[in-house]
Image 1: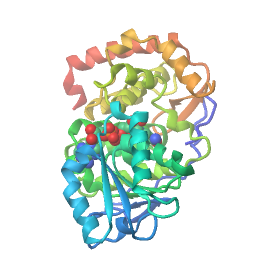
Image 2: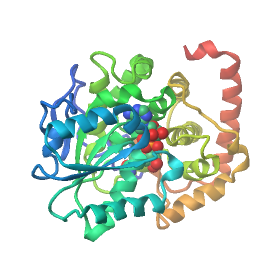
Image 3: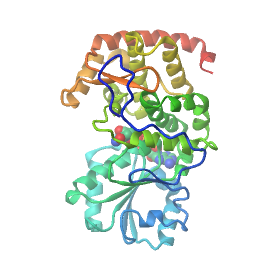
Length: 370
Ligand SMILES: NC(=O)c1ccc[n+]([C@@H]2O[C@H](COP(=O)([O-])OP(=O)(O)OC[C@H]3O[C@@H](n4cnc5c(N)ncnc54)[C@H](O)[C@@H]3O)[C@@H](O)[C@H]2O)c1
């Protein structure tokens, strides 16, 4: 998502327009390397057994919770398709996104004896597992092939170019409600900065998505496809991807394990919405719609730590992590964004105060969100 660098241009982001949401689950490639494969673990489906290379041996790296819930079907599928496999089960939450986990995968890959061109690693789990396995495979013997099977919404959008990804939305059924909401923050991010229609869809059906773990008839798979499409085309520098990351990395680190990734991103997006409102980039009605939708999706718009972290310091950290690049995305209306290079800590503190007051009013009149 490339964003224009002017504050007053409504220019599109440079990504192809999203297709009109289809009513049924899409089949086949939605972005290069990514396919929706409903019934992925049905022994009659060859997709997973054949993914990433000729059928043969596979090292299966799987999130511990996913293994508990879906492991029997996974093993049954691989056995039924005659895939000789070993399994490494890894815990999958933010606090285990460590180099230890990366080395564990690399060690197991070495002892399993994967050849670089031969058997790929199968990574089945959420965004954390995808990042751990991705890094291990990238480092091991100058790149070992791997295949991703995302089992969360974050996992779905954690795009790695060139990595074969097979999506079966049915995995989402077992996700906890809060994790679904956290994943929907990622959907909202795409909607806010790049897809006004998706935003309207979330307003109408976001609660259904939450209630049904994105299985709601005629909408779940369509929304997933739309999000994948919007994040599909890297569109150069992918500036829009940094939306929701002005200070959320600092907030998330400080608030672990209490705050989920998508929740920290949402607090960041809420604050940047207020900054945009105060700059006249979104109007009062748009800002209300955005903040209310966040609440309807059961996402936080603020966090007590916002009072204590130095927003200016968090912003400086973000700029440092981005090699000094100061251009940061803000919403421009709904469904578009702009890059600004003059954001400072004082402006963020002012916006945080506004947001605190707004939240107090909204908390006192919760029906406003209904
Ligand atoms: N690289 C990218 O583009 C990108 C994009 C978005 C998110 N991320 C990363 O993804 C991470 C967040 O991902 P996440 O929310 O998937 O976290 P996660 O991988 O920690 O999964 C969340 C929780 O859900 C459990 N789980 C996973 N699938 C399940 C299922 N189908 N049923 C029941 N439980 C299940 C996991 O065990 C874990 O406890 C963050 O670290 C973030 O940095 C990366």
